[in-house]
Image (cartoon, rainbow, N blue to C red):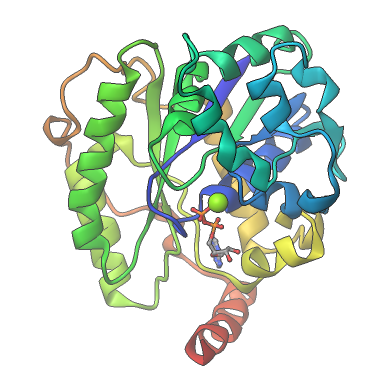
Length: 299
Ligand SMILES: Nc1ncnc2c1ncn2[C@@H]1O[C@H](COP(=O)(O)OP(=O)(O)O)[C@@H](O)[C@H]1O
Ligand SMILES: [Mg+2]
């Protein structure tokens, strides 16, 4: 089983949106997929229409009690081939409860190993911190995807991202996880600054950046409130197409595939990069973007 953590200590950069929609896209491609919600906020759980407050067994129980197999807390979703290990606010106590336990960073990996023959891929939605939960996710994973929000603060974010990558590398020490890629999210082609940042990210990080970028769209923002992934909520939308493209990149492998945590620092992996070919928008996209800008201007 391939295990992909979606991690970045920054909140609101698109981790849950990526975990939910990548998991759904991989399932749509015929893979047997498990999504593990490792955030006490339970957003991925909500994103598949489960009310976190009414669940009596969640990933918290599997992490804090070795007697409870993760298979007992896994539940179905409205996507064929996709199962969910749900979470709720109880999980916020897990870090403290595990703090005195030997091998506390290994519990998730041990639980996932028990079900590894039942799934082709496990996608882990990490919380917005680099604490014990994220460490468990990274240790359990073969790959990590870091969503990066392309916005006006991205240049500042870039510095923080380098720190994140370095912190992750330090945390990676006991495991073999590799950074599969940086995923640019909230991209807005109409905004010159957004294009400049995309270009700078590619120049700086080279092939570490996924070819696929995720545009800011209304449908992606709306889907969670319907309790669905965008793949079923709006299958013809740009967001659905982009997450399907990301799933393809993930399945087909990346130029950086051989990269491991022992490699050179990210900053040294500078390769010149062309701006993405994904930058064209069709009529539907333009309409969605227009609606989008109104929505965001109202906030
Ligand atoms: N590409 C996108 N376009 C529009 N809204 C988005 C997009 N990605 C995420 N969002 C919205 O932005 C908010 C934060 O995204 P989320 O995926 O929850 O981030 P994180 O898990 O990193 O905190 C959510 O309300 C989500 O619906
Ligand atoms: Mg989240």
